[in-house]
Image (cartoon, rainbow, N blue to C red):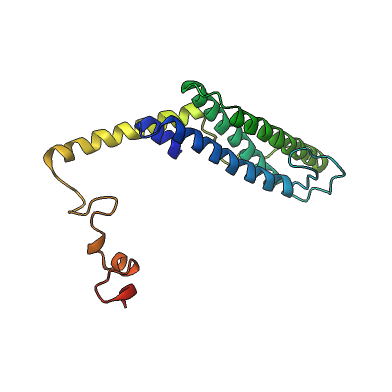
Length: 191
């Protein structure tokens, strides 16, 4: 969500976005590898070769795993859409995405197999998934509302926080924060 906000706010650049994409994809892959492990899939990450141990996950856990897979696919759609918008043709990112898709496809296959063995259907998703477009519109709306709300304050010079600016403008006046930061005026660590 942060990188979408940075894109809309104009505080991002191509290099920063690509770095963010790679970082996010690596984090997704680590999560998927953990899901693969929980599903008792053996073999080289995403290959699923060899004899499988029985899947001991509950119907609920499989449902949450499926939610994560669906959300991951939507997230990747957003990355791909953004790469097209800024004309990035990075073979490394495309390769990571292809490998990730193979991995989650294999996990999803195991999920469906286990649900079939249980004689159960996929649980209802726990939360409505927002698409890339919905998330982008929501952030644009929030940013425009923040801009409109802060405009009268900036014009009048009025600060509703009573002199404490967001982001740390008034940290020194808060005794708890000063003690935590070691600036309590009574020596080290507020002692």
